[in-house]
Length: 220
Image (cartoon, rainbow, N blue to C red):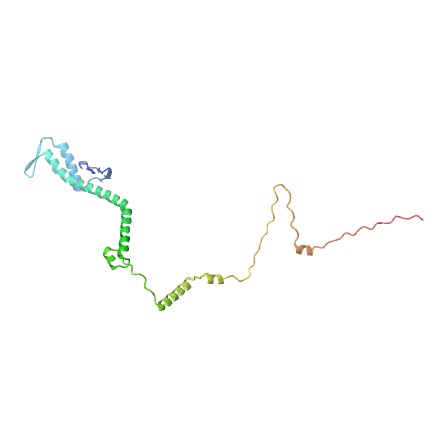
């Protein structure tokens, strides 16, 4: 069983409240609570022990005065303890919510299967009754198909057959830049590319005539 421990509130500053190991910081008292706390501290410091003070025609000892004021302070401390308890309960509920939801869904599905998905008695359990889809008449099917076609036209969407029929048929002019091959790392020059056919046709070929041998002179 958890116990609540609270300070007596005689201090003018804030304090802490513990509940089962959890702690809740309290702000400095204000208003009547602050005045009561300050008066308790003043009585204990100023009024001599064993003396009495007349309150409303009744003589009250120092301890009785402190006890009267402590009852007021205890009422505020009970509120602080309640706030701590509520905070702990909310934290615990938050951690247990997934399990609670799963448990509820399981019971809901079981009741739906027991009574039937379209049973109107499900409404009494807070379960939405499934009405099912209403079959369309031939006229309604035609209207639905027409609406779907209009929607596709507005969205510019096409089917596979329509996409296959759309192809580019114009002419193109493409420029290709050829880059000369880089020289090998060993320093050897790359092999020269063979001349194009047009270059071979436009190049004039010069043939060197063969030398005619001269016959030696014959003596007469």
